[in-house]
Amino acid sequence: MSHTAPVTPVAEHAAPAAGSSEADPSWIRVKSLEKVYRPARSAPTHALSDIDLNVRRGEFVSVVGPSGCGKTTLLKILAGLIKRTSGEVSIAGRQVDRPIPEVGMVFQAATLLPWRSILDNVMVPAEIQKLDKKKARKRADELLEMVGLGEFQDKYPAELSGGMQQRAGICRALVHDPAVILMDEPFGALDAMTREYMNLELLRIWKENAATIVLVTHSIPEAVFLSDRVVVMSPRPGRIAEILDIDLPRPRELRMMSSDAAGVYVERIRKHFNASVID
Ligand SMILES: Nc1ncnc2c1ncn2[C@@H]1O[C@H](COP(=O)(O)OP(=O)(O)O)[C@@H](O)[C@H]1O
Ligand SMILES: [Mg+2]
Image (cartoon, rainbow, N blue to C red; front, side, top):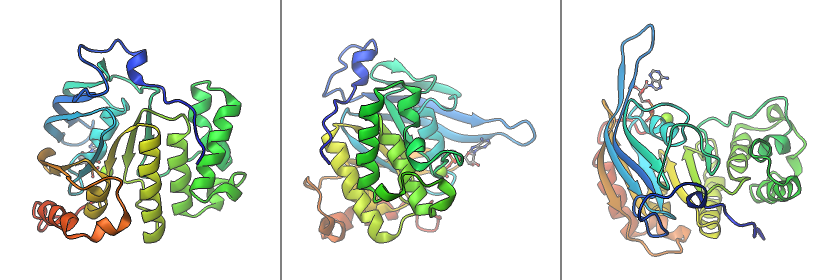
């Protein structure tokens, strides 16, 4: 990929908090976060409780935990898509209350617009942000090529498999070179080999763009392989059970996935879940 467009650092747009810099250990800052869903017709759900998490600029953090422990809720709050009940959430010193343009989100389901071609779907964030159309188009081409959808640009979502739609959703999240990439089980619909390939591509994009990534995944080995740190969550209400530093060398290579060193981390994370279903 010959992409050279500069990443727009959020800090340049925001009024940076004191000490907000490259090495800022709390570039994404979550403090005492609580989320209670209060549906009109059913009992409230305490989805997140007492979440404290700081993410460094340029860090790759994964979140794992059983189904229903609040992973999607956490990402949606970070993306400014839903309201928190209490606590603080900020990115680059700016409180998150609504979606921030510098954040790209990949949803659990691809959520493509059925009446738009694949290319036009990928271009949505560029249109919303009124980016230079030619540049964005070039970037969209590169991304679609990268994920093997180069020849499918003019097709419609219904003409593509679930895995292909998911890959298009990943391109859409990356087209505006977001400084922060939030991903909710983005590789769930992919076959094992495509998934490994996408893992490596994601690491490349992360490095090239100096992006900060928070990834939710149900694959513990994948979380270990990709991340600087893995956040392990427990359910009812969703809390952080442990945060592990993954001290494996970079660049990561696929063979590390099956290394003894990675295996030690995987086992340690698995111990948290014994009988529960990982989602
Ligand atoms: N919009 C909503 N209204 C009510 N409850 C919700 C809503 N979204 C999620 N929940 C509940 O909040 C909890 C956490 O959900 P979620 O964040 O989707 O978990 P995960 O992504 O870890 O599976 C679950 O018990 C879920 O049923
Ligand atoms: Mg989820």
